[in-house]
Amino acid sequence: SADALFKSDRSGVSDMLPGGQRELDALAARLRASDVTVKRLTITGHTDRLGDGAYNDRLSLQRANTVRAYLQGAGVHVPMQVRGAGEREPVSGSACAGDQRTASLIACLQPDRRVVVEIVGSAVK
Image 1: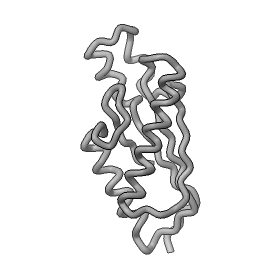
Image 2: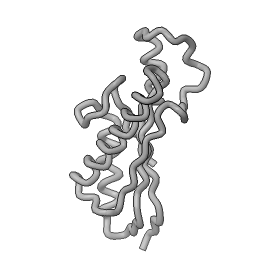
Image 3: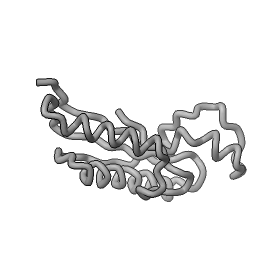
Image 4: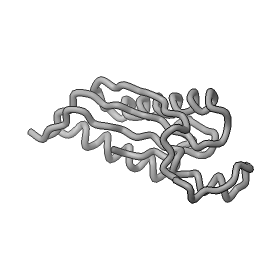
């Protein structure tokens, strides 16, 4: 899997953090390598808990679509399924207390703003 972390409330390529772009570039290079066979990718977008559920569902799907387009632009040509999980699968746990949109809470929830890429049917030749 690869994580592409996004800025708060954003979903575009320019909104990805540099570390996330580097991880996607490395993933794309590996997927293009001749020694790897991939049946498909499942790309799941996620959000933090801030905002309402319907908005977060849309935002998470936009993030997944951004990663799909990024990988396609990087030369990855395998079937890709995208889905949005919204805020339903946080990784920040209970460490991020409060509901007020403060800078510290936004920073604490950063790990939740991600996209997970699952490689299905990968095999080294």
